[in-house]
Structure formats: structure tokens, C-alpha cells
Image 1 (cartoon, rainbow, N blue to C red):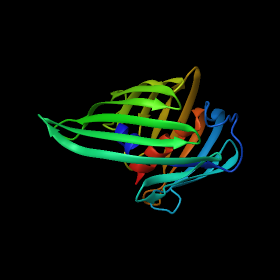
Image 2 (image 1 turned 90 degrees about the vertical axis):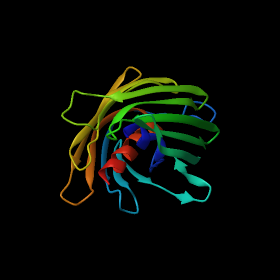
Image 3 (image 1 turned 30 degrees about the vertical axis):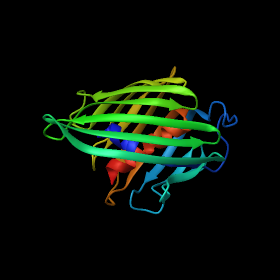
Length: 225
């Protein structure tokens, strides 16, 4: 389910300011280095997340149209379309396949995900493959039994130019965490549920691509709601 949320829900991170490094869309996109994250997650609001990243105003929003999803990330025009075949019976399991295609500036993304649920609809394993910004994506997603939760997974593999190893525990309606490494740099984000129904706060330090941070925040919003 967690991998499905990453692939099937597309979010745009719109910074009111500059990233640590920005090149044109034909090369590597913005990389954030040890930035502070403080986002209020509100899946039912007009903006699904508002707050600051690196001390600068940031927000998450979805824009739906007949052609898919579009928006802006650090000045780059971003467009995406998602196709999904959800929970198709396969023996005793259920399989969801998802394809996401899009672009950020001149850089294109084409990702395919396959996620398998058991007969009790618990996540068993998944894989995401494809290309982002001209570099390969190959990520395995498996359950993580280190938590007292059925909502914890480990994501390990290659996301564009970065090797990633991420542990995510994102239970519905409860506190959680997303931490790991992107390349050689660690990050640690915490999820604190609030009294208001469906709302939570995502805080901590992050290093890595801004679009990966957007997908993490989007996944948190997906399960919070």
C-alpha cells in the first residue's frame, strides 16, 4: 500500500525561494542538503500541506484535469499522468500495477510500479522501475517488521542518480516516521498526529531530491487522510 501511494498519488512541491542547487531541466534537478522540514498535513484542505522547507515557505497541492496532473516545482513546469489497474486477483493475492509519466522542465519521468497484497489485503512486496531525469529507477519495497505496525516498509534501490535506503512507518491515524539515506546523506522525518481529524505535522531534517521529498509528504498525506 505504501508503494502504491508513492506511485499513484502525485504531488507538487512549490518552494517560495531557491533550492540548495538548481540546474536547468536537462540536468540534475534541485538537491536539498540537510534542510529543516516543518509541514502541516491536511489532506482535506485546499493545500494538502503547508509550512516551511529550509526555512522558506512551501506548500503541496494537487491539480486535477482531464489530462492528468500539472504544476510547478522550483520554476520548472511539471506535468504527470497516472494509469492504474487496482487490486486485480492473482491466485490468492491481489496485484496493483501503476504507470506514472511526466516531465519537470526538460527532464522526463516514466515509472512503472507493481504492488502485491496478500489475501488479507496486507502489503507483501512491490517494485518500482523506470527512468527519471535520464537516470534509472529501480526500487524494491518490502514489509519492515521492526515496528509494531503493518504499515511499515523498507524501500531500497536506485532513484535517478541517488542510491536510496528508506524505512517508512506511516500508520493511518497514528504517529510514524520516515528515515534513511539518499546517497551518502541521512535524513530523519517524524509524523505527529494532531487532535484535528486527519491532520498531522511532518518535521525533521532532509537531504535529497526535492521531488522525492514531495512524494514522501504526499504519501504521509495519503495515509493521514
